[in-house]
Amino acid sequence: MGVENQKQKPQGPQLMPSIHFKCLQEKPLCFLNLNKKNWFGYHRFKNDDAYVEWHQHFGFLISADGKNITCFTDQNSPQLSVYLYTQVYSFALIHQGVDSLHGSLLSKEGKTVALIGDCGRGKSTLASQLISHGWQLLGDDLIVFDSNQNRSNGLWVFPGEPFLKIQPRVFNKFFPDYKQNCVLNQFTRKKILAFPEVNQQPVFLHRIFYLNKPQAQISLRALSKIESYWVLNENIFNVVDFSPQRKRNLFAWLTQINNQARVLELNYPRKFEFLDAVENLITSELNL
Image (cartoon, rainbow, N blue to C red; front, side, top):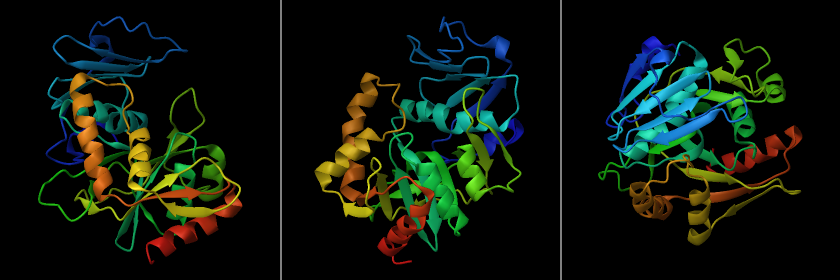
């Protein structure tokens, strides 16, 4: 997870920008006026370079073509990897004309699923349940699709960074003895768990499970194409950069993903005791 290894993390080798490192004091001047309450900032320069910063943590300059990221930091930490390969990478992808979904990616016995849904819907908790029963985490937060035109037989996705961010109660339930963990930042109690590296080759995406708001009953329902389009639209990863170029590309990208995706709405109460039944629904859908 250290900085010295980060140039070799190819989430889609043709998409991965070159990464360069400088000390935090060398960051560009763009008057973000950040503080403890307003600790994230974004600025797009006239030349279409972009700069994002987390107050007193990291700053990142993304080139207009999305092929270079300069990281301004005095830290070498797991937190840096999490921000770099999710939040920051999403800006670089947008500069390259590529979009992404917000969710967790998991695989078992050759079947790959994406868990999507708004923040707080339980994606990481359900992912923890699946991991504890033999599923492999392929990536968390950022889901990048392989746009290779030769892959016309469904959706293929790039495995990402195998980090999981979970609340302490979820950690204590599923991973009480897991040593490779640390706190995400000073404003949250969420822990970062690092799992083993995964093969970076694209994998076929069999299902997308949309975690609806908590419901009293457990159910699984296939969404219509109209419903799934709006669900996918609500779960794009980057909700900061809406440049004219991105707006032009977004509809076509969502339509392409929606035409090939099988999206199912997953409803269940958000209590640990229901997770076994939810997992059974998922495995039954995949014939595992």
